[in-house]
Image 1 (cartoon, helix red, strand yellow):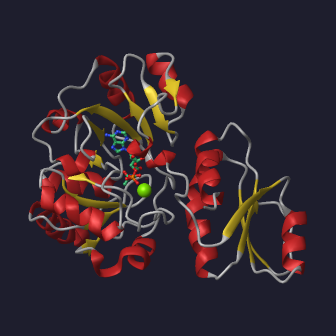
Image 2 (cartoon, protein in one colour; image 1 turned 90 degrees about the vertical axis):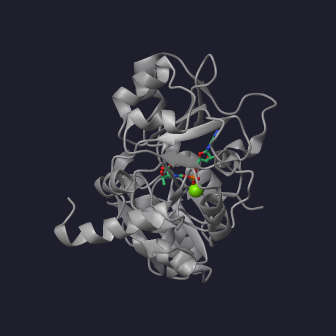
Image 3 (cartoon, rainbow, N blue to C red; image 1 turned 90 degrees about the horizontal axis):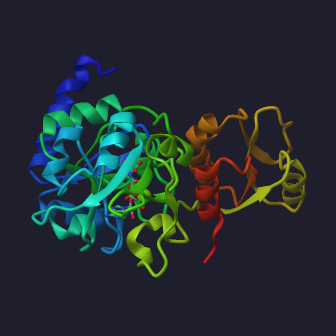
Length: 321
Ligand code: TXA
Ligand code: MG
């Protein structure tokens, strides 16, 4: 629900975007750092604010499926079917780019990633802006993605012209990225729309990067990504044994576990229900909380192996380089 006093804020945000400024805004997945996608200088400001390598392309956000032609050559039939089923929503489609799109958006590649977000504030902003909006997650590169306006403020502060506070993001992890430019679509990043849901619409897809392909194309494939400051590890069961031994060793431990797990002295425990969506919604927020509390170690109760998007993010959060 968008309230009346927010309308003038949205109008101002839309003006900032059209003028080449940076606006952080909520989506149903995580907060995005938006800039006018057809304004090369504006898009470069995103990369500067995040400290993002220029080799990593950004997702273009649209108010409606009909606007795909503003940035992409075409929406192939499989893309059309998926758009009908999942847009607005947390699915990003990789399409052939239009030649006149700034190369900054696509990191010089032949394709562009596009999605129509479902969050009412994002939709209202995109409608008012009237331009395609390039938006990666609104965090410094390699940090955990933001799921509240406060996370954005702490990570980017005055590097952005405006932050729209739309409360916590309901989804909590990033969109699914699917390349539909190949004869058989390829899942580049697991996310809130599952492989099974996609295959129910268009049949079998491939998963992961193609052999010999440039890795930097999806930071889903960059190792240290989505990482908290503290060392993160997975533990069996509730993780209580591991947490106890770390706490006994004098470590300040952040512990993400199941709601029914008992407290352990010396640990900051966040309990979540045994539910994939609830876990995703809480995951990044928990990692932010542990960082803020100065935890030196993080222990996460290992989720079921079928929760692939969550495992993908946990694996990256745990990677030390
Ligand atoms: O949920 C989301 O997708 C959020 C919200 C703000 O929409 N955005 C997000 O953006 O997570 P970012 O930049 O943090 O991640 C974008 C992902 C990266 O894995 C990037 O490599 C990939 O999409 N990507 C972008 N353009 C691409 C392209 N042309 N081909 C392949 N992958 C692309
Ligand atoms: Mg990101």
